[in-house]
Image (cartoon, rainbow, N blue to C red; front, side):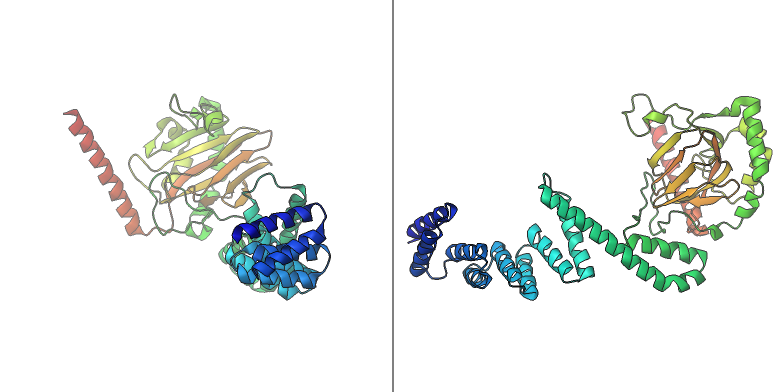
Length: 427
């Protein structure tokens, strides 16, 4: 029986392909007489009715096919096409949802649902569905031109919808946001920007010790550093000492990036051994650079007055950072989130910018800020002049005093263990 039905299906398909629809219909009718409800025969009759614009007959045939083969999403897609021809939006929605329930990855079903929701004026649902479609399409290659155009229109629809929604929501929260403190404004605005697709959120990426449960904030709130205004008041004196340092001894400036010989090519290769990004260290990993410190007594006094971390072999570090014209420091992240990095801009021509995570700032001379350098950050100088910033590290302000002491003891014990191992290896 199955072989006989198969032959009749082949005959019907060939007759339909060559335009002999009468013969095709006769063969399909014969199949249904032999095996009522045969899904392939019903589906082919439905397709022929669909091509002739007989949407009622098409729907009847397709629904009959789904009763025999309930798990085939293509049949439900055909039901949806017939329902669309009949102008039955809810029937089309139900059929498309049945196809999606069978296979959530059914790209065409998801796309037809998005198109239906858009036609019915269901803006939010359409935007959500189009977002799924766009996500699914990101891994697809060699798309036909018509689909490329459809997806481009979908991106425009989603973008415009998000912009309208963002405008509506921001108008609604504007009075409360205006009355909020600066910290709340900044954090809530970042929340809105992420929700509406205007910025990503970044997490800590520590190449060394990662201290858990600390906030992954890009820029630390200023009120964590009550001494910052006093430091800023000394900007002119610190700048003058830097300029004097450069005049007297070339500033003891060395390339900031110095890679070991044989290091494979990487994002730092262009800056390796280059003074495009130079540094004059006052302290480096807890070691004082006497020539630079002696030339900058007011800078040293200002730094020593601050509650900096003191971890032998690790902290503090403090240096004048020099970025030459038209130079760029590539995006990177630091060692440990137990510290905060402070920038005090000294010489900043227009065109110099600094990005941490999703927020970009222009340095302003004499205005310090603190950031978490284990969140991706980068810097660039698009000007024709040198940019100079005093950079130093502090404890992460979210660490308690007890945690600071524990961390110091941790590093001391770890270093003692390594030293003991080295002594043992030498015996």
